[in-house]
Image (tube, rainbow, N blue to C red; front, side, top):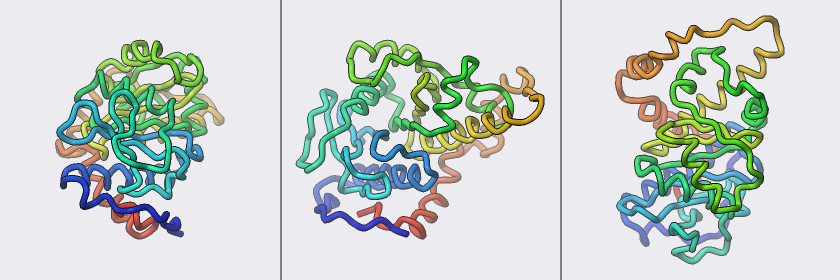
Length: 257
């Protein structure tokens, strides 16, 4: 069932076309995270850079469930975490700490997506982290970093270590905490998280069975080339995103308001 609409004014006529498109895609990403059951009530976050800016980002209103979020309800903030437009909702302080650090260091990252899923946290608590157990895992292992747990991400002094551990990678496992992906588009960040979440779910289930058969390291070494071939050079995000939006239109309409 579609979530009831909150009585919030539309911002469609208050922003330019590029920002509105970003708002719609980001709201869709929140709805999809809820649909795939990766949300943790209101306690995770996805951010997107406002097109044409270096220090302005869109992030969720703290207190809304992910299946309630719309393009107009998203909050625009600057690099200091100050709201740049009126909103009755605050911004998650831990969300701002993580996302502002990544956006400041990774200018190629239009979107930063963070989850606290059960399977993701389970694997993040395992000493060896992601294991080469599935076809999905080869794409994650080809661009994966790890960041040790330092408590709830509220301190600015954690930012340099977070940025260092992510480096130029697409996937970051936050030990004892959850998963993080970045993407040149919102679609790319979401599809990266789809693979990351699938890898963790497959691993937890495989470990409950018999002896494991790992993927050979030589196969992992060519994962980027295999991904390009499988998607005909378009990338998984470009291929899957239109269909995901059609699914939302059926199951969770209203995100584009």
